Image 1 (spheres, rainbow, N blue to C red):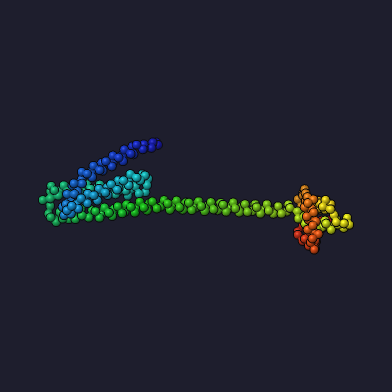
Image 2: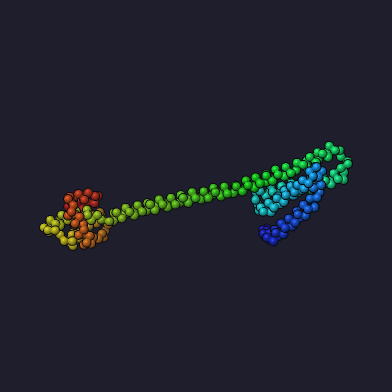
Length: 267
């Protein structure tokens, strides 16, 4: 059976209640811990003992509140919180025991118990450093995984872009090749048509006559498959320009060295 999500208000109430209870517990045990620190001959610095223990408990409690339940650092935080409360409870119990039954134990045992208490601030610092290292370690794993995932995504995107570019390049090359095949080389065609027409007329052909000769040669080449069907002849102005280029060339027939040779189809 599916459970409904916990209301946010309930979470806030639980956190507020836990914080208030921790503050009350710290206030109640502060004097007791101060008295225990006094038995270590710390003087006015005896207040540092309850400060160290309560700061440890508050830190673990605050971090536990801020982490989600499924966070990998939640378990170490809870262990540190339980340890902080256990240390505070044990110190309170020890102070009461030394007050009420201090005469029943020998001085050596009493001194050993107080030495154990004196080591607690160092233990608190070590536990806080351990907690910090765990949190930082778990915090660094997620960005690393995110960076790796982002890197994989970027590689896939770059590969996809590369494939698209190759496809576009291939398509562009194909289009360019088809365009070259579809575009007649009128200078080559005219190099054959112009001498024939000049010889036939016995004079320099006009622009319209040369245009008609180019159209006739293009029709023959299209029938032979050397040009696309329906290739149109150039305009009169273009025909005149081609005629001028052929007339200005020293060896007009040298321009007919391409793969399209109309003379082969016209002989």
